[in-house]
Image (cartoon, rainbow, N blue to C red; front, side):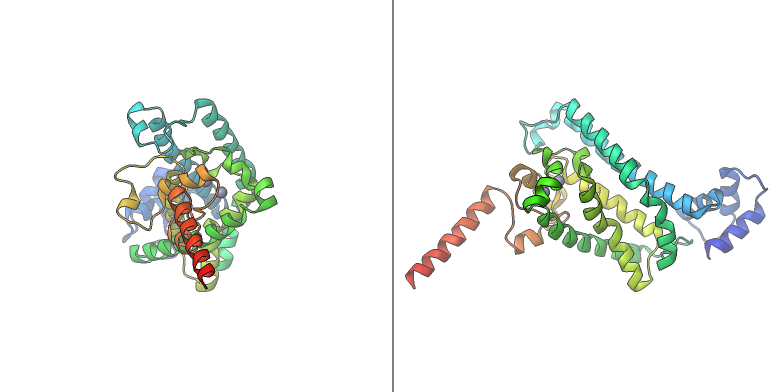
Length: 306
Ligand SMILES: [Zn+2]
Ligand SMILES: [Zn+2]
């Protein structure tokens, strides 16, 4: 069922000045939709302006998921019990540091993001990103989100590595490295050019995917952005627990991986996975440095023997 048909049905059932609850009741009468699909369709019908509805949805999703995921890390930072799990446990962020970071991230969200977000729906319509109900199957959503994780990781690895070169570092990426011991809120503390460049991996990759395949739903993008935000905030949390995801899924990067990047300023450039840094020998930390040195020493000795 398309949202247009859906909207017509719902509007027929509604009085002219329907509240959200009346809209929801009308939408609920349409068979074959689950609770989330009913909410989604009610929202679009109620808003009556798809551009505004999508813009507002994505802006709120970003704010709610980013700050919502950062809050538990702030509480953990203020709870002495968790200090034994802090990777750089002599460098707990102060309230002042977190407050400064919060202000900067909020300014960036309102100044850098608030403008392009209104173009998102027209772009979606142009390249065929669907916002109709019902949603695609969970298998399709999982497959596409997994693919976006893999593609974003590659994008992030190369562009983040590039940002560590000379002037790129000095004028753009240095801002993100202000905190040698990161904390959740610092995930998006970055120069506007970096926000756009690395943000393309999150927003541009699904757009490119749909441009070529014509097979993507806006709800899938919501799930992807939520998980990507969780990944970014968690990677900056600065905590390593016995239950951290990388203990069960060794390819997963997590805080253990990204904290080393902030600590050493070099190596561990990827976002979600460990394979790029492993394969291209750019792992950060003392152990990786030792192994690199041992390898080059062995190579040099071999060369001398010849
Ligand atoms: Zn960096
Ligand atoms: Zn970082």
